[in-house]
Length: 252
Image (cartoon, rainbow, N blue to C red; front, top):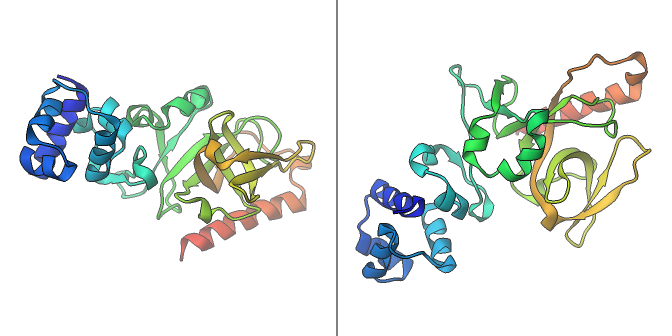
């Protein structure tokens, strides 16, 4: 027996469908399906794709996570049947926000699609953030003032690249750099231009195919007091206009 065979048996029984009917849906014989569910045969990739689309669940989840322990019905479905993100609420009905700590920043690149990794993250609630999936990410360095090293950016998950607005700031998870927080501009030809608020750092391009996740700035949590030089009129105005714009957008 395997985790995969346990998963597809559990999902089938939850859906209350017979092996024969499911085999018909998957365009295979019942005898072939029984071998996959009993763990006697390994499913080819084409069948994994059909199973993933049938159950609206990612291939990663089918192969590597005990779905009996995951609240599948409460998960947010993402494009392409990617790993699903749970939207959970606290006892007061407020969205729960997972916080990626600085010590787990490197691990997030490989753990972002692992529900067990996400489940172990600390959680907070912010009552003014609603209607979406939020997560808090650590900020490192001095490239995005007024945010300082040690701050956290709370982002709202962006499901489609077309929802990215030029000139706004986003947390990106990329294959090569991990977590980055930058101001974005869509540069055509499936590329994004990443720009720092600190003009000392030159803008640079990345391919859209390098991006694993995009989270739109919602608010920030500062862990260090601002110095007088940090609080120029322009930086404060820009920060509050960005928050105002996000909240106004969320009301529609």
